[in-house]
Image 1 (cartoon, protein in one colour):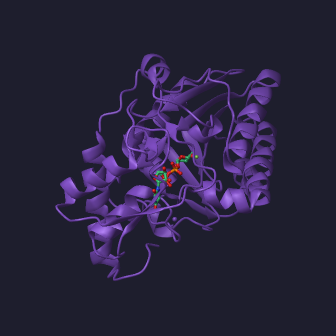
Image 2 (cartoon, helix red, strand yellow):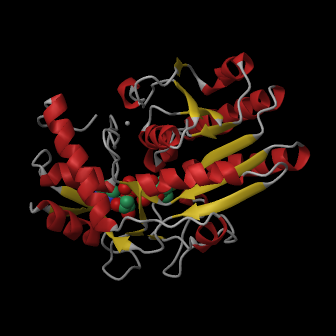
Length: 329
Ligand code: UFG
């Protein structure tokens, strides 16, 4: 298929671009490089440096079979302080994209949704029919887009699939997490293991969980990318399907720290800091619908996710000559 990947220079978008190409698809990447990196787009892939509001110019040039839409603001903490950015980029930006897709008769959309639409979960795992109660503007804005896509599919022949990611981590070859301001647990913990930060701050140890730290469901970015390729085949005109993507197993922050120490063979000093606003205690997926209907199975366990992220971290240290300070999204 001929597809447009918005946000294809970002962490997840660049891995999906790579996997689409390996699968024989014809890809064009559009990214404004506000958080992405031009060199994360595989060589030879046509790249358009533009805002999603201008995606119509690309879709007007030639017929496209689908759009995979990753371009978004995606930090829970930032969304608590700057909600307007999340409504403008995530909701208004996607509104422009949907209008352009309708104008140019693009039949398929795969949307990068999130577990953040659900809000607080629990030990049993969150299924797609769980009533959404987002705890942050990031989650609210992504939920608004999911609702907008459902309406679009009811009224027009668009076939859409929203994939609600849990905690994505790991790397695929040269593509991994390179956020300019890093906020995610695994890359920060790897920085500590590498001696680039003195310690990890654990955001709260008084949560209602087995060891008092937050429980999350980690999924390898390559497993996630493969689900997108399957979803593209699965989009049906006039239908909006929604799938949770995780591993179906929760790990606490302390368990992640222990796994990083095990995989890297380095010590990770920790301190306990206050809870981070917007964080739920539990986010674990019931991903049985994706497994059954997409015939998809995640392959990587937590140690593999961390080992791949660590290999990427070490590789960038050499290629970029990274010394102290933060990582560069
Ligand atoms: N954490 C720390 N210290 C850190 C960084 C993170 O203790 O320095 C904790 C967080 O409080 C959280 C867990 O580690 O409990 C994971 O945090 P991340 O920032 O890595 O990821 P989030 O859980 O915030 O993000 C994920 C997804 C989002 C989704 C969000 C919903 O990446 O797409 O969950 O809360 F929106």
